[in-house]
View 1 (cartoon, one colour):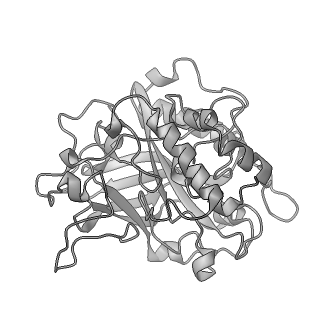
View 2 (cartoon, rainbow, N blue to C red):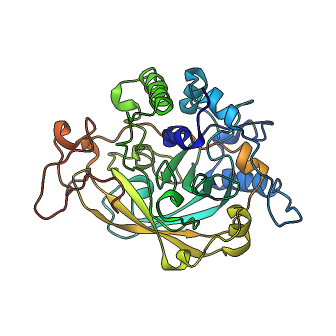
Length: 372
């Protein structure tokens, strides 16, 4: 049975890592290097493999076909590799079927003074690679809408990277408002997953495959992703940047939201190939997103900081087909709430069912992942 691209994206947060590695480029001692050395290597590889512009001013389209998507999305063995420990390059022979094309740059996350969190969410400044992607690569239509996604890679001294993923939703924004702007809406590390278990047979089959994969991962239940709509931030809060030293105690936000700035919203896609236009028109040293954080499922969002693009954006083969963003899957649970956060009863609004929070007359509690 062929799986339409619309339904293929229901489990997108758990599938954004599927990709191809044609040649391993990283040196054998890569993981033991410093954060700066790793950034220099990756950025050099990216710049040395950028796409040529065709006569119409566009980049090559993705070679992923609907047949490829349909064949691989229901393959539990294939999907399990998403969660496998690995390097910053992808495994050999894996076709990238979700977000196969994008643009990448060097970003700076500036966390405001007084942050209650640890790791890269503590007060300070953190350099990372950031990739903006948005299926599809072809002409934008109501049936083929832009689907903005964002990934960040934080590099550490002598240890593997930690990665963050955010998105708008699994269907695409054009179906809702005809927008082709990447910066029209907020991007969140968790969004409404109430579409799980809908009546579409292909969607249900995909979700069943994902649950099979997740259930077979090592460790206990809290070491595995909670659902298709949310990814934990625990791993990034558990280590200091760039040293890679473990935090004495981890305080992790439940969810963070990236809100496009007024400056970012001035950018409007007019070309069908959004990547080429973003590379041409978005400058370095621009404040693209304001960042807010939610301490628990039962707490309000509060300002965390700012996200700046520090380099020019580029698009190329290494970034699209070789660079790997490792899937984070350690669950958030109430033990990571900051001391002054609103406590959560695990049975009411913790990891068992994060859609349900106690009612509050002030409106401080949220049921909607897209709140920010």
